[in-house]
Image 1: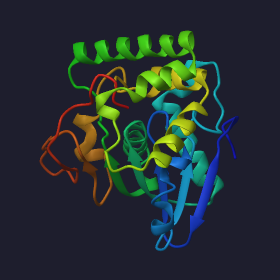
Image 2: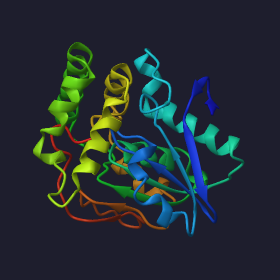
Image 3: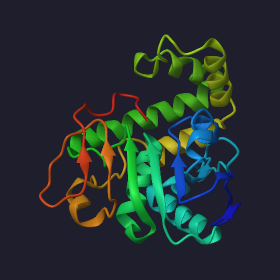
Image 4: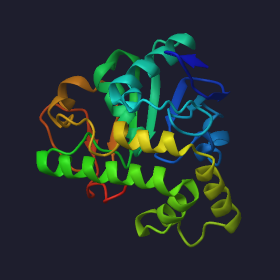
Length: 242
């Protein structure tokens, strides 16, 4: 599908209320394959490859990967599909995209579900350090290539798969990650990494701007009077969590 001048890969299945799924860093629409059939029994499941991932475009201009641009792209997607609003589920980097969209286009989101996502880092120094860390990782991806990066990425304890995961699933996940464009991954870190939004986190505006009937955040507890954000205790993103 052509959205704001870029080709974005979109898949849809099932029937019922529309549910839009946004994968995490290095992921794609294939990340949802195991759960899509069950969800499609009661919802119209719409999944996309985020910019720089899978079969979607990977422009060389890093500015095109900003969270502001992601909001414009999701608006264009819903317009193209003739949907006024959707239920929205985002994982990790996809969760940041989903939350930014819900804050800036609240009328387009009925219910917001977040897994391992964050509204941003509140401490200015911590945010700058994370942006620098993501920039360094982006340079390594470009300098070392996709194979070396995926091997490094999958060695991180934080990203280790559970012991019960079958070997075939592990191989499939690695193959899916290798299918990504290194330019797309590098620029995704620069535009949508955990240090974004670069100027300030979204925590202060959540009580007034997030319209979701339920919003689950699995690694940060933050209470705000009147907020409909329901948080579950956990920790911040790790040094390379996306």
